[in-house]
Image (cartoon, rainbow, N blue to C red; front, side):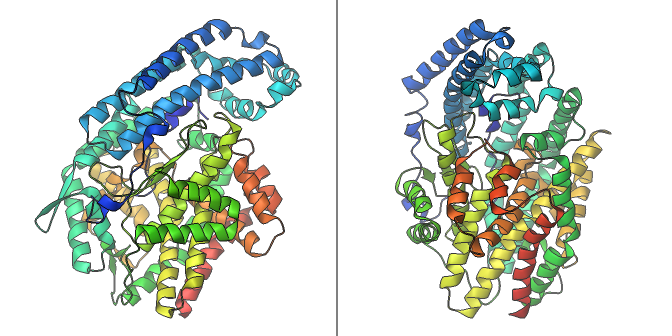
Length: 611
């Protein structure tokens, strides 16, 4: 939680991956989502009414409570929090709708205008509510403890705990109000510029104009010539636009540095760690463990891949190439649904029931399409509605894993929603738990069912590559962000310098098997997380290593594992990672915890070396 309204945690819905393409011949048959659970359309009178209601209630809320929170009894303070939650949920509903529309088609000018208008309106309304968390944080600890003796307020203890984490970084009411009101013309506008620029770019490939997402998707083609042409063409397009992307990056880094300085955060990543309810030292331990294991993991695997492909060196466009001799067969959408449904059903029928709801209702936007956000995500929206999932489904095994991943998020969001709007929100470090666990369930289901040794090796290698992308690559991204933000303190970085930092972290993480050509120096520019969610990326590595350890507890046959797991998801944001992992005998603050997770990846590579 931050001092900003919760709906602003999803300003542009950064995608989890960066590979997509425009609609193929199969795409028209693939389902699109139906957002009518939120609103029927941009001109829906219900949306207008909700905004008017939220504004009226926000003004009344401020008149009733501003300057008076410290004097309220525990019961009255609980009532005030419940009233504030109801208003914030109305704002969250409108904000979710605008964000999802924009994600499905950011190239539509009317949608872009609507999204910006909604963001501005929500910010205006939220200005009336800003006092609330600021005043909550000014209540003295002893006084609040006394109020918490009331059972009604005790329900909100996790909300108060998380809100008051930011007490040392809270500014005056006047400054907080200015920062909130100017956010729509600051970072949000630069993020919108990034999204619309990416959506509008076109790459010339084999005489055809294609989207950036389609060109990136061809980096997984079995034909090395196709991959090379795509890699060089993408590099050329981003190279031609690199000054704009460097300006966006420099501006957002400076904007963050100003805010961090005002709030006295120790380093650029500290605010993210605080939002994730995880200590700087725990993140440092994760990053250190992964970096130490670069040779044991990525360097070793990609040396194997180069050998399998008969190459002395891999080029950057070979990283996601399919292995020779075993093509990744096309998996129809209906079969993908069956695969994932079976995996979740096999783990626990209760999970399978929730999964089935997503797969049988128009809650998933499946096909690639022009203007659509690249990659995939799951958005919780609000408890009074339901989550939505965005995919760009191409029919590969990796896309099935993505479906399993996002459905894991969806299950988590559905189960946590019973906590309510304020208490269902899960820190990013734990938000990846259910998604990565769902991937592991689906992978093991596919692996167990496969009888062909060559196909088994392909599946295993694909899983290793996905884990390396989730752990090694994301920590390398984190290192890249850290170095860029640290250097930005001394002045604006030239595009060439940003490219140098990118090449350094890629060389360190992926190893000597790669020959990085100069055109790869601009590939940092398309990663949406750097723009929308600075330092988000380590949460993937956190979640992957956590799940590897958690899955080990499951395969050991721990009694009652499923009940404990579902209870963990249902807890939402009410418990911290230490409390959530304790029933499984796990502790993320233990240095050996991360080693256990990394050992799983190394063990898979051991199997590939012996194959």
